[in-house]
Image (cartoon, helix red, strand yellow):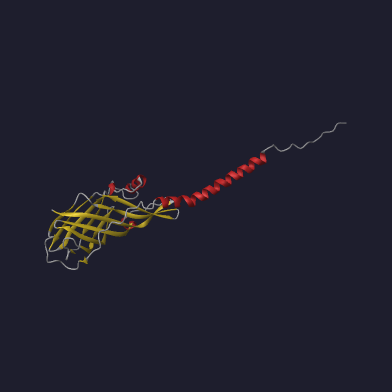
Length: 247
């Protein structure tokens, strides 16, 4: 009479160890991902400190123009100088909760001014958007693309004065505060705006105009990008500074 012996097969050697190692590896990966989600944005934000261009500004205004000046030496046509002009934008970029100030700049600014009776009666300023650049070519390509500025169809941002601006008290070497009332056109959409600015008379035949306008991009049909991990605030600032010479 025969009998059958049943023997339990021992577990394969090393298998529990491999499983334990796998769980440790997965745990390390999870920890690294969590650290990256919090630390990398902070490193990026810290690396951008000082990268944003300083706000455009001239010396403190010595007076505020409230009436037309009896001195009509400014009367005539003025053209924006080819050198020394700067215009661009300033926005807050948010990367996983970390704010970074981004500035785009260009020196491609053109336009003209007309002064009559001591008042700035006409003025146009045009900024070439395709030349606006930041410290990131990838960001600049997105800015110029159809989803944001669409520079192929709307190559410039334009401002035109609609109300006379008194320039009383603008002697050589002095700076006055003014409000430039006019129409801003971006991406084919126009809005009535008032731009706080300063006008500095650097010499008999040259003035420098500097100003900044806070705006909401969506008011001009511009969709601020949001890629999930990085987004741009809908509010921003347009800044400019240029010299105009007597024509």
